[in-house]
View 1 (cartoon, rainbow, N blue to C red):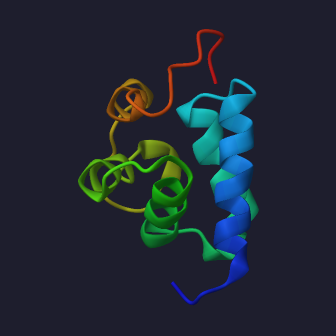
View 2 (tube, rainbow, N blue to C red):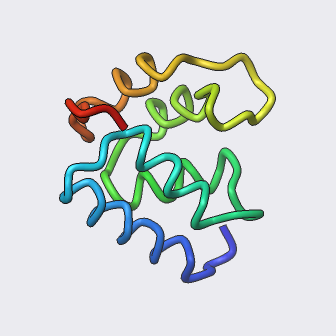
Length: 95
């Protein structure tokens, strides 16, 4: 990461959104939208680690979520939410 304050800003926004009830899918889309062209595997891992303290190993698997379209074999919405459920409760209303 290039010490750009945008990553810390996005991490702060993710914390607020989670506290307001956003689920993992909604938070992932928020990070992707906020980071725009800067979004990728490393920025996803960095911002979610900063925001929620999720271990890198978990985030490494989670970044394969099919919703990101990052080119690798994708994991489903349910698997993505399951991986992050210890840090981001599943949103019962759907994300």
